[in-house]
Image (cartoon, rainbow, N blue to C red; front, side, top):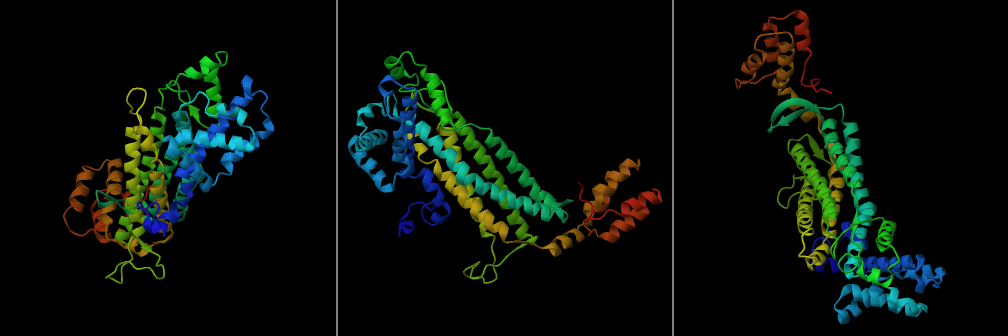
Length: 444
C-alpha cells in the first residue's frame, strides 16, 4: 500500500520506474553514504598514520567497511533513533559508528571518528558522491539507451525523404533519419560536456581552514591529505571554501542535465507533432485505452509523459543551480535542506527516459503519408531551381520563382514541368531542372 499513500508520484505512481534511485537518494542511502565517508576518513588517518593510530590493526579495515557495506534499513533506524536525542543527523552517524566500534572491540580509537571535521565535510562529500554514482550507474545508462535507440532509428530511416517544416510551413525536403540524427548529435555533445565536469567536495573543517587539524598535528600537510582523500572517492576537493561547498561546479552539472532535458523536450514535441501529422503511427498495445470516450484514440501519451516529467526535472534543476551557490557568510542551513531534493530531478528524468524508450519502441513509419505530403508540395523544389538559375546568370531567378509559387494556386509536378519549359536556358540545364523532385532534393 505504500505507493498508494505516497505524497510524491516519484515514490507512488512511478515508484517502479524510480526504485533504483532509492539506493542513492533515500534517507537510508544518505545515512549509508555518510557512514562510508566517516569510515574511509578514519582509515585514511590510519594510513598516514597519526601517531595514536599507528598500532591500529589494518586487518580490521574490512570490519570497518562492513559497517556501511552491509548496513540495512533496520540498522539505519538506529541512527534515526540517536538523532531524536542529538537533533543533529551527522552527529547521530558519528555516535552510531562509535557504537559499532565498541561492538567490534576497537572503541579505544573511537575519538578519531569525525576527527577535526564539521558536519558539512561529511555532507558535502557524501552528496556529490551520491549524485556521481547515481548518474554513472543508473541515469546515464538509461539516457544512453535512448540515444542508441535514436541512432538506430536514424540509420534505419536515413534514406527516407520527408517534407521539412520551418515556421510550420513546407520547406526544403529533408530525411527522417537526418532529423533523428540531429537529436543524437545534440545529446552526445552534452554527454561529452557532462563527462568533462568534476564532482566537487568540501573537506576543510569548521570554516574551511582545517584549524583543528593544524592545531592538533601542525607538522602534517593537511590540505594535501584532504586533496588525496577526496580524490580517492572520485571527487575533486574545492579549495578555498567557507564551512560549506560553494556549489558552483555542482550547479554546472545541474545546468548540463537541464540542457539534456531541454533537448529531450524538443524531441518529445517534434515526435508528438510528427504523429499528429500521421508521419508516424503507433503500435497498438492490447488492452490499452486511448480515451475513456473515443474508442479509436491512440494518443502519444509516452511523449507527453516524458515532456511533463522533463519539465518538472528542469524546474528543480534550475532552482538547485541558482540557489545552492548562495549562502550567508560562512554558511546557513538553506543548502542542507535543499540538497535533500537532488534526487528528485533525476527521478523525474528517469520516468521520462522510460516513457521515451517505450514511445520510440511503438513508432511505425508511415511512408505513404510522407510520400503524399511531398507530392502535395512541389513548390519546395523552387529553391533548387532558382539556385541553378542563379548559377547560369538567369535574370531575377528568385523573384521569378516567387511569382510562380506564391499565387495561392496548387503547385504540382505539371506546374513545375510547364514552368521549366518556359525558361530561356539550354536543354541541358532544363534536363538538370527536370531531375529535381521533392524526393531527391534532400541534400547531404
